[in-house]
Amino acid sequence: MVKDGYIRDIDVKYLISGPAPLGRILNYIKRIKLKQYTTVIRGPQDALNNLDDWTTCFMVGLGLINEYNGPEDINLTQDGEIIYNLIYELPDFPDNLRKVKDDLFFIKQDIRLKHSELYNTLKEIFLKSRVIKNLAIFFRKENIKEINRQNFYNIFGKNFSIEKAGFNRLPSLIQIAEFCDILVEDSKIIKIYDDKYIYGGEITKETNKDVAKDIMRKDLMKKEDFKKIDNLDEEILEDLSNSILPEKHESLLSLFLRNKKIIIKLKELYKGKCQICGFTFEKNNGENYSEAHHVIPLGDKGSDEISNLIIVCANCHSQLHYDKPELKEFDGNKRKIKLNGEDKVIIYKKEHLKKLKLD
Image (tube, rainbow, N blue to C red; front, side, top):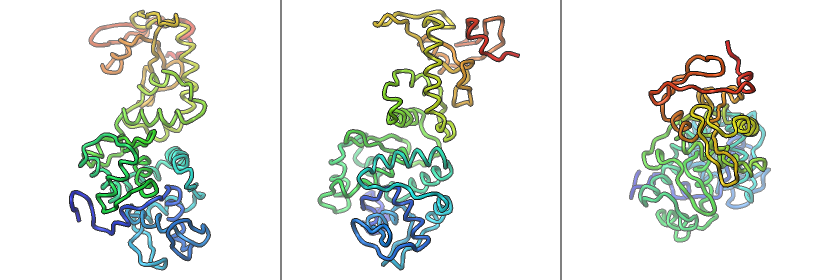
């Protein structure tokens, strides 16, 4: 049933419930299936005997378990069974309440990188759930792109007759929305990531390129090794396809480190001059400005080897991305390319050329 724009076909306690960390939700699916509990209580739980009522209520809203009238009446839905079959052999997931965001990041990374079928299945089930659909309805009704976290809790909660929706009421909603890449919570501001789902209600397995790049960048910056990553991340991210596949994301961290070193060496080799037009300009620090480009984009299964990289100016780089360049044969240290309707050449230095495997 839809009332005032919101889905209200189940009790509000199943739609507005918190906190329910993702790790705990996944662990509970196994415990419910195997009946490894004795009671259901609200608040802190004895991990060996009890299920937390906040979590089980939220799982009803997510469509993972049926409505229940006591511990003996809790059963997985068909979607819950599907997830159980994907996780029953996996170890328990972390569910420390005090580190919800950290746990979510590492759980998401682990699932997306190692268990892509589970990641896609969870995302598809969550996005069709009543709790996440209500979240999308809220942003559409309020016509907002971002909102202060506390304002969100209070305004959203009042739509369901909760006079004061404090922090402990709704973190589960935001956490699952972040897992699905439709919202992000950053410095107490909740922002829309995926307009397509929020405003169109569409569930797709492909992620908007700009959104995917943003997600990748945030994931990378959370790793200590990438705190000083500079603009080289943009040069690599730009070459990713519209849909970043899990297997590509799995190798992305090592790819960044590897490409960063290669790009620095190539820029030094060409003294920052474009291999196509020869243009460069001097930056404030005295270095020549240039950008790196993957001849065959990473998203199109292009190699991350030095043989697939060239140094170009910003203008040629933009043309390479937004035109449909035609790569042609080599003639000595030159490779012909048709760019923006004009015949041009990519000029290689001998140190770079020997890295290419030419037939």
